[in-house]
Amino acid sequence: MTERERVRREHNELWQSATPALTPGVVGVDAGMTLTKVARASAGGIALAWYETNDERAGARIAAEVESASCVGVTGALLGAVHDGERCVRVQEIDAAARGVLALMESDGRAGSDGFVMALLGTGTAFAAVRGENVTHLGGTPLGGGSFAGIARRVDASLSYAGMIAEAERGNRRHVDAMISDIYPEGIGRVCPDLTAAHLARSRDGSLADFLAGLLNLHGENIAQIAASRALIAGLRRVVLTGGFAHSNPELIASMTATAALFGVTTELAPAPGFAGAIGAALVAAENTPVSAM
Image (cartoon, rainbow, N blue to C red; front, side, top):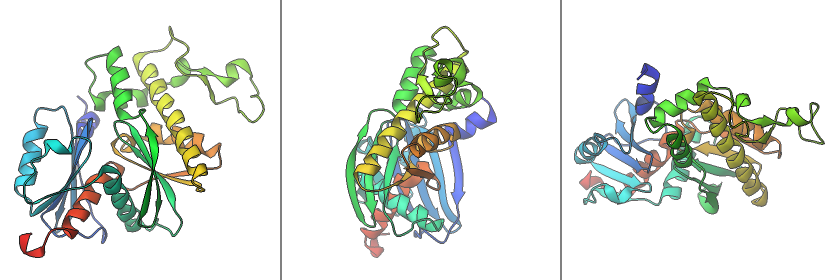
């Protein structure tokens, strides 16, 4: 395992900003099906860490975080796996992510007064219109980090999530995708020649890395089209990307940004996108736990 892959598998960083403000000892846990994310408030900032959910060591680490916390906010698809003690506050996944995204965007000076569509890229992808404190669920798609990883492991069962993202970055999707330029060298109508005509259509061509690059782009282009349509239906033209699948995944973000732009919709990546749910859950927990109990 390379150092880059190790960092992705066991991610650790420190978020240092005046906001979101959390009392030291408050912890947020986002227990996803693919990745489990933890945000712990400390005097120096918010310590951020993630683990692959199926890593046998993850459970013990999460238990240790919860045991030593003053209060805990828990969210995510597998929130039931986290011990439900008296210090735990359970937060609905989309509400937690929206709260975290708003706090993180504010910390970066990008919250703005206009609403946006949050694209929560996790194991699957959920969409929500966020207008201040008003959050409206807009449905979702089963495309996400889970489908990407599941398909990739059908090709190579030994791949870790970190490994497949790293391989995708090394690949060239043009070796496996059929492009518009292959059929119409100058494009056709408003469709430019650099767009994909058919995903993974060159079934006998390319390396594993090329296949994974094409598979990642398949997810990026299709999720972005759905996100853009949800935004336009909601009367919005701004999409904010967040969630574990968006974190440290620049090729996915580039694919989504280019595709959404075709519809006149702008995209931007939230700060520390993989930890929005954990931070949001921590904020809600802190607000709903009496000071005397912390």
